Amino acid sequence: MYEKEPDAVHVTLENYRCDGHSSEPLFFCLLLDDVETSETAKPYSYGMAFIYFGYELGRGRFLYLEDLYLEEPYRKRGAGSLVMKFLARMALDLCCNNFYWVALDWNTPALNLYEKIGAKVQKGVLTVRYTQDTLRAFANASG
Image (tube, rainbow, N blue to C red):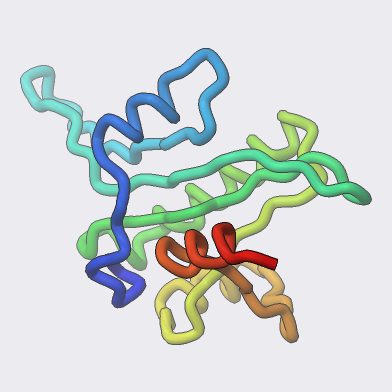
């Protein structure tokens, strides 16, 4: 995984099928295809954007970008900016008031892209979470 947590993946293909292909999917995945002009060429997926929607008490609906991935040869060629603009338009078209994502502080290429497209990094906000074992331990603790 890009987050430097190779053991962090705990979902299966069946989880993705169940959660993404129901009548009320929990997420959506946009595939980025390179389509050649030749009639015999097949589209080639070079990236993806993994999104879902949420709701905030005071702000309403939002679009959340969980992950954006582009293969190396497609970076720095405008694909990232194009995807972000598409997602921003999608958010507006679907009556979202905000479009959120997080970036790892060491992911310089992503941070450079976000700066280039005019996104503002919110300082002073820390992500707080329980994961796997700590989630179970807290939920099952007495008291």
